Image 1 (tube, helix red, strand yellow):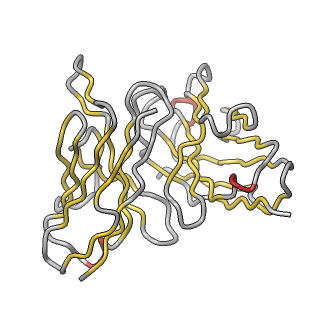
Image 2: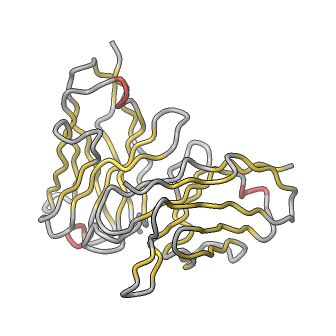
Length: 114
Length: 122
């Protein structure tokens, strides 16, 4: 199975500042035939289900604010929040959906306000 | 609007069984792959099982293979998870999630339900 490792485990950022979360996969999740990275990012607020933010590593889901962006390719990916807002406090997960299941998640990164 | 409503969770003794349901609305249920994801208390997300929209392909995590069975009734717009031989480590909130396509393979989870809590304890 593909192992997803996020860093850091927790992060405290001041309002208006940039937040960066990293995700590394144990093998490439890039399909050469279509040049797509099979990597998604989710946001989970306390007491709520996860919410899809980013898919194909960099495509923002409809309705997601443009301060959220995804980048990276192959095995190394990043979720960036350009200007942290109070409502962005949450746990963030990366997930690979390469090939057939099992589709694994990272362990999560807890984002707080400094 | 896509809506997914899980039910069937509760307290069950080790070795017992439980069937979860996920009632779907707001989309053509038979055209989309559906998945179960669980989250143990205070822990991360774990993919459990998936069923293609075509009804041909099913997938299971090794941790539940042989004990859990996923099924769907497209006439009732409902996804199921039959859980047998339950263990303490199966204690979790179970979410159903909808993929953006009929195929399971190569797709993320676009919509999620609110989840139902399963507690396995004596």
